[in-house]
Length: 299
Image 1 (spheres, helix red, strand yellow):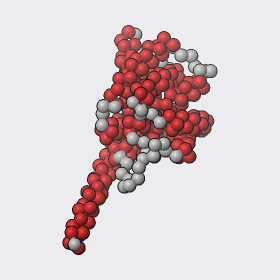
Image 2 (cartoon, rainbow, N blue to C red):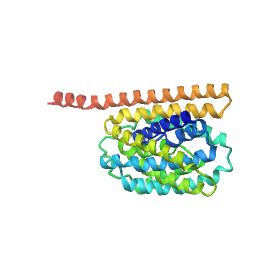
Image 3 (spheres, helix red, strand yellow):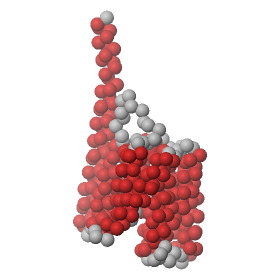
């Protein structure tokens, strides 16, 4: 019992580091930890994870806010829209088999990972807006909330890419802003569970405290790691988690084979995208040189 509690608290600290550093990995790591290590029933584990992730995200946003890595308007609007979508997704989830939902979610995680590893194609002569357009934020929030409501986890894995890739926020700012969104959606989900699930508040308090310490550490590390390294680390982390979820939902042989193919495809797409972007960058660099040579010849 003591060993299980110690392992659970240690795992919770890693969950906090993941949330503070990457803005994701909370629920999708907390639920397995609480089920397989703390030996909680599934619904109690989900409810407890919502408390842990919500409180950890709310506290973890503080170092990001002090470092000006939070877009409050974007986070609040995205969070409200996400709560609406999550409610609709939760109502739809009862009509779709859980294995189908999680298999689709795992494949979507791998596609998201490829996009994060590949990165955004730089836009020539176009500055990133201080705040993304409200309509775009609301649409992205509803879609992400709908998907996360269907599968019950993985908000950060979708919120961070949505803010970074679709909203155009720098990766550190996307991570900080995502914590606002995750906290809002987690507490909304917890409110729905409390009417039917009993929580072990002692265990929940210990796990939450450990996760908060980890999130503060992760938040400090986030400002010291280059944006490109952080984005790629997040992408590869999502690859690992996507493969794990995929193998858990399918028969062993089929799941392993499909996971290998999916991971290989993700790596191929990411590497091809990076090479293509690098080639286009070389072309852009070569263009001014050719123009200057041509101008010199004309003179």
